Image 1 (cartoon, chains in turn green, cyan):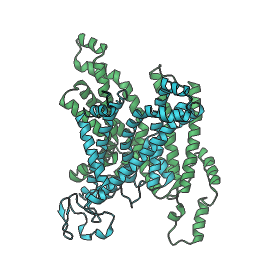
Image 2 (image 1 turned 90 degrees about the vertical axis):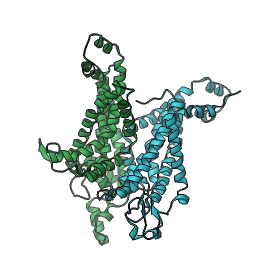
Image 3 (image 1 turned 120 degrees about the vertical axis):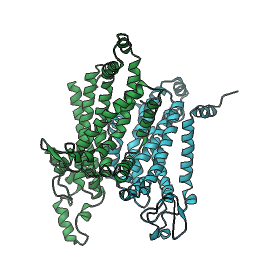
Image 4 (image 1 turned 180 degrees about the vertical axis):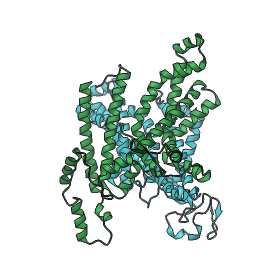
Length: 321
Length: 293
């Protein structure tokens, strides 16, 4: 176990360094941010000064070594566009993204499991087939288009929910959150649902397959013979047994949800790190782009490691290599 | 009478009515895309054809200037949406198709090499593929786009960079099974070169699962390109794909002018669902063991 964690940590550092080199060199090659940062009427001297101030006049390898040296100390550079540390900018926006991602996961579980159970317990019925059909559509729908449809129906036609923005936030343990006020909740519902759609479909399919299999098992037959109420059989015995794979898969999805939040945040003008990334790519704000990618890669490395460890704990047959 | 495998395949495929319908829709979509310059009512790139008075017409409105009926309405520059969608479909399908073919060729070649040669090459390639597959496609695509910049060629490169790993893994898995079979032994015994054995003997036997992966990946390549273009980091504005059309219409959505982004979205949805239906049936026919959840 310890050897596994050590090997994975070494591998992860290699991935991080490699990724940073690729991203750094690549972004370096795309356009000159000075042209965007100074006013069009700026003289050549002003451009040179800006360039020198941001350290952009040094050769690439010097810039990269300096970046690595700073990164180890937790400094990922100053944002060109905002003039504050890129790290600070990301940490400022992170709570919004995390709130969105956690809400989406909760919605996926809260809707997906009952719908999946319904479809799994009554597989041939109209309702069951409708749920499974809807889940196939949920898999193929492009997220961004579904977001537009949600905005059109609930914000434009019905006018019941806001079309974008985060609305007012209230502090919870010093972190601004939306879900404590009604207005904030209203702003949260559409983006969170949009982000959840793919995972709702996935949870439905997992729950349905699990429930169908569990209903044929001996322990369910025994519970029936014992005279337990169907409600108790499903609620306690079946659910308990099918929850482990569902929870594992949903936990594994957390990283993807944060990554896919880029799209949802852009549509709903949600002020999270995904929207920040797209804006930063637009204005060639290199330090922010690099910082976002490094942090996300780091997060993925941790999520993957956690899932591998959790798997081997839950299922001892899984051997870590 | 010797059985005809092609006929058998068609018969097996036709057992699913829904998949046949998907096939028909896909055919219509592809014909529309290929013949867009001939069939579209207007050339959406020709700025000389646009009139200021025709902007944001609702679907089915007759233009006061040209007298033409705009079935799907017009956008904020007075462009006929039906024509824009037909041209956009052309771009989207073209990018998705080219990216899939390139990823197929590159990924399968690497996968076959890894499976047949083994050793260090195999370990290195599969490690890279594993690490890459543990990240979501959109993140890899964004990293590549941030590194490569925008443009048709660069988007295709990014899509290939995202998708090669699926083909490499599938091809390697198939090659590992095939290389121990007797016909490979026979070919080796005949003294054929390794290159010839891989390309002429192993490859054809690995084709079925690769085709299934390709059919599934076309849809995700098209979706990914549309998503990137929607985010404004995909195709340039001079070659609007469906994603860019949807992004353009997004600004008009809040004022109730839904058609500018909803219709291109429906075209995209129709294409993706049709491809998925066909791909699912292909999987069932060609590779019954491969089942998803």
